[in-house]
Image (cartoon, rainbow, N blue to C red; front, side):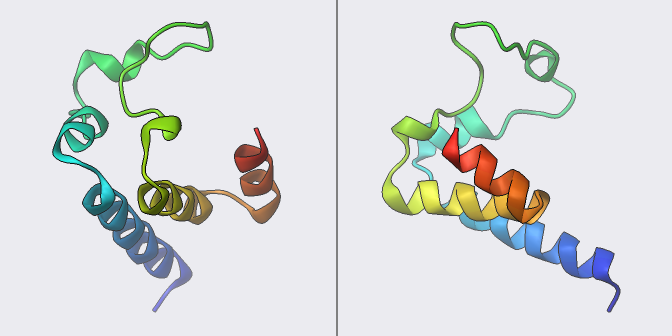
Length: 84
């Protein structure tokens, strides 16, 4: 199995675990359509954003979000992201 296939499988599994750890309302907010306009309205400026806030997640859902993030980032970048 190639490294790319293994990474893809780990990311898919982590995304599924994250989605499974969310409430129905959180899942609806987190799983927006790719072709929707919400993905182009992202900003660093303060204000409301589409999606789910980490602060609103339960412990298991937050761990699942961190596991998903860890599949996409280097160890150094993941450490920076969770520290922020």
